[in-house]
Amino acid sequence: MDGFNLKVIVAWGFFFAFVIISVYIIVIKKLKRVVRGEEEREAPDFVLENIRHTLDQRKAIFHELEVQEKLNEIILNNLSIGVAVFDKFKIFKSANPMFLKLFNLSQESVNQSIVQFQDGSPELLQFVRQLKDTGDGKGQIDNTSIQGRIVKLQARPVSELLGGKGGYLVLAEDITEIEAAKSQLELKKRLEIIGEMSAGLAHEFRNALSTLKGYAQMIENESPPSIIAQHNTQILSEVEEINNVVNQFLLYAKPLQLNLQIVSGATIREDILLTFPDLQNILEITVIPDDISFKTDRTLLKQCLINLIRNSREHLAGTGRIHVHIEKLKGSIRIAVQDNGSGMDAQIVEHALVPFYTTRKDGTGLGLSLCEKIVSRLGGSITIESATDVGTTVVLTL
Image 1 (tube, rainbow, N blue to C red):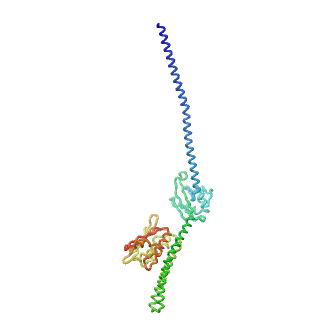
Image 2: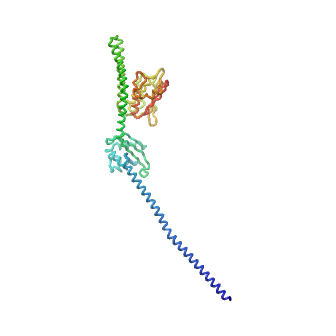
């Protein structure tokens, strides 16, 4: 092959190589543009899909909240307890139907001042004002007569109310039926106790009548005047004892009417000392603090303490002493009557509050049981601690 033909072949080889490489580059670039174009077209679709998904999620959440809100509203509207909201300025902001019904209010009462309650619901006005006066935002009034019903009111401050501005959540519960049921139950128990007490009362009367009959027969037999005088004294003593038993029985059997008033510790101490002037040397009374005062029925509390001190006196011997300790504790008043007398064993302590249960020949067995009834009526409790030859402590917690 000559030199010319070789050059032609090489030239054509370079040409075909250039064409192939150019076509390859063009194809690659075109493919890149296609891929890039698809990505550009896919990017907006992906963003839109994310937005759509987020919106669907939020819509589902809002729907769930809406369902929950409707459910809460249904529950609130069907509660047997009245629920109301007052803001921190005592503006009536919201209430469920039961609250409106209990206080004879309409929906138009909402967003108005509590002054509107002056005519129709003065009890509610007094209650809300009391919350304001106490300053602590908490309060409760039991057995408030409203529209012929008995309503229990409670309130508490809730800082999360009304968008975080704070306010009061007030609850009103109609307890008329509950109180009626309690009264019926108390009556039933009282009748049962009276039935049990009747046997003891009959026993006391039989003993007293037998004694009276004996003295009357002695007088009938024309005893000397001096002996007749002694018999008359015994008869009068027995009659007084019968009268005491009857009075204690009636006091125990009938419902106790409370006359609550503010009573000071000094007043209670004076009542006790005036009742037992003969015990000045053995009776000690301490009041802590000295200026203590509390709400109670003075007459009933005095009767209870008289019974306890009499019991202590009858168990004393020799150098015995009685100590009455009155102390104000957190949320309660503690009154302890303590003696260092003969005391009681565990079995006697167990039955000490049972009506007509007594270990003394001349005892009525009504002193402690009457005391328990009084303390219970005053909303308190009574406990007895005693040991033979050590003494007895009776604690009243009011």
